[in-house]
Image (cartoon, rainbow, N blue to C red; front, side, top):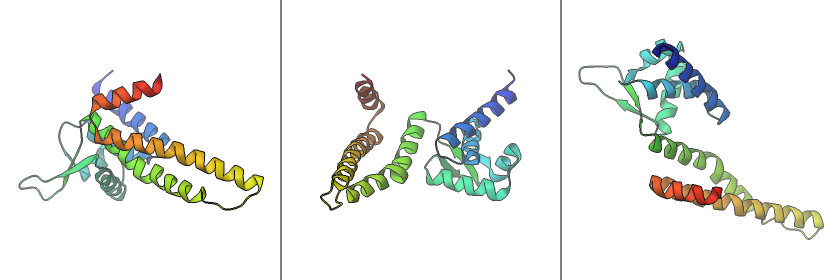
Length: 166
């Protein structure tokens, strides 16, 4: 397989995986392009290589910066901005985990905490409160594990993951 063919295949696959993980396909493709680029790229480079609009490129580059997956690079003598992806896969996984935890899991833990306070004595009410309590318990535990894993090193995470998988 030629390099350009492999790069295209990776960008398309990363985009498809990203959309399955709840991330915009274009955002994942921009991330993939920056991951495999040895040098920082400008917005124009991203637009040209992915055949996307300036608005699409700008929006997704800003989102990737917000996720701490991409940094803005300033080059002396250049008026254009350049962008470079984090290359350390542990940092990438940690940043994605931290962002998804913040956007998805933490709001669910808060909601379930409120729902388990539901009043009522009927069987239906008791069943609802029990389910909300059980879900709050498991999501709180997952939240705690993710919190610790994003603040720890690789060895702790691998040990914890292997313990959970046994």
